Length: 345
Length: 88
Image (cartoon, rainbow over all chains, first blue to last red; front, top):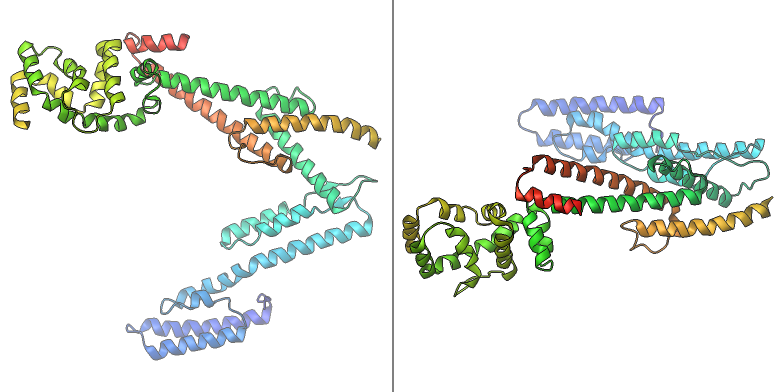
């Protein structure tokens, strides 16, 4: 089946392809697709396939009227694509056999690793043309790892595999040596491993320290302090700014309860509107009817935030937590606000 | 020759096994995996990748920290707090 590359067969196929092309051209010329022509073409194609004794073009030729031009190129290349890994495999294994024979004949110390051959075989059956081409070339490059067996060393497969393994390990170690500073002064694997372990540990500590710093110096720093004060109740929520939207949701649900405390608010507006928003939110957890799922730690976290950090900390928190709500309280006049509250009641 | 090598090799082999298991315990995704002996190459490869990722993380974090420090107002109470935290 496989030898399509032979001269007479390809010529044969070329002639067939020309016939197919002319048939397809005829098909394309008609605006309406003729059933007879279609059937004739597919019958011819089937015959041709049986002639060739292969199923290589089946996939692309099976599609009805779109066949024409693609059948030319992609059919043949598809067949080529299908065949290619086998060719490559056969080639590589033959190369390997040759290599073995050479070794046994001439007593050379060049041997072929079993693992390398396995890898090449595993890598070859890819089906996309580009990757198959690249793996074929790469497989031919890395196909045989040269393991030198010195005189008197064993050449059986186990020893060879072990040697390949040790080779790989030392290669990795060399790579790690480049990666770890100060590792090239140390000789010996144990020292190097020690150095690598120390380096990894120091890197881990560095990352931990840096992330702690970042978490501490985030704009949400107020919540970190709150977190410390409240026994890390908010440990997940306060650490990064990405969770701020999540925080706004439960706080937004508090809003109705704020609006329900109208007697208190009226009292406060009569007393004066300076610091109104602050007072209101502070009194928020003590609302008579906490309607809705108001989370206690969230409410409690705002409160000490006010007490501890003062106005600067409060501004960050309030603008992000009460989106627009508190800002309107601070900007709008108190009587207008009272009207709004009444309307909402 | 071979006996001398093997005796010396066995000691360092033990040491190396110990070190390798220690190294494996440092890697983040190594706890779920049981066997260590079969895959020293894999372990070393993972170590390479882990060191690279740690490098990246350190770079990223220091960039973020420097950004934060540069954008921060030096007189704000927040900066005061951060400085006190960083000093500690």
